Length: 378
Image 1 (tube, rainbow, N blue to C red):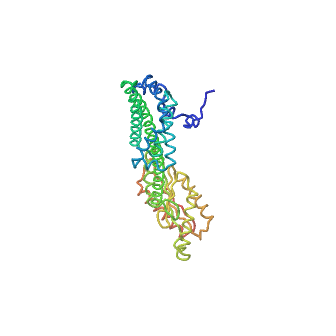
Image 2 (image 1 turned 120 degrees about the vertical axis):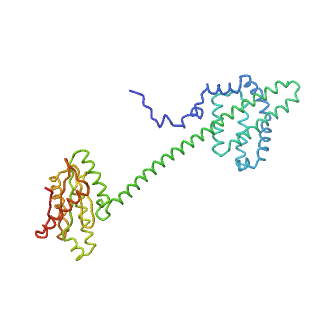
Image 3 (image 1 turned 180 degrees about the vertical axis):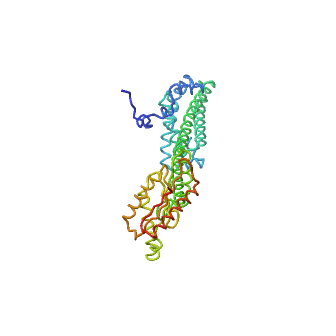
């Protein structure tokens, strides 16, 4: 069986050190030191200075923060006495680690955490660089002042000490800046991801709103069927499809008998209720591929792609059966059926005209014989 790794566990950043997350390996650490020409001799030089630094640690830290607090921008970042005390404690530890003599992956992780903390609390790179420069100057100045009083210390040794401190602090600066850059990249990636999600959400919202506007433009609000605009759009398109595929298309055109009487005697509210019933009946009777439309007033159309007159007659009967189950007030349908294709095709206006004429023939029959009447173009 293959070893399947849970991605949530495999990529959980809390289970990795900062160095591992940023892919800073032992080889990378050594490469950086080589670029700065930081040698084992430099490490030994710094370790040898450790005791002297430890003895005078408080003086170095106090001198550093006395100078730092003279800069208003830095004083505002520090903020209060409690924070300053924590910073002094952290600085003591930082300085002792500079002269510990061990600059391995654990040392690197500590420096990376310093950078992450500085970036998180809003210390800008310019403030960090100025602080590191001041710290280096304070440490070196303090050491050299005392070393000059010791005749056993040669100038060459002073330069070696100065160089070792400088190289290590430049090494630290690289690591801190890496965390700044990494944090900024993560922020950019997060912002990009959020922006993409927002854009996708916005795109979906726009698509939904656009579809709603299109539906409003092509849908009859009373019956829920397509309006005249929607009818023409679908009829033009479906005739073109029928011509291309050499399949028949049938148009059902019908209006309501005695509808005007309902409006006149029972009012337009009752008339609207009856039109709603027609819309529901059409929606229930048609197939998924058909298009039910309110052409205007009490006239309706059904577009039946890939259908012959025989199919349309069946649908009309189904429509009548559904409609008659409602409160119809004696209203009936006069229906005209017109087929085009599969051999020769009528233009949409011609097809409508044929169906309309057949509907009026059926309507004339209904005056002599009340009821539903259907007239196909046989």
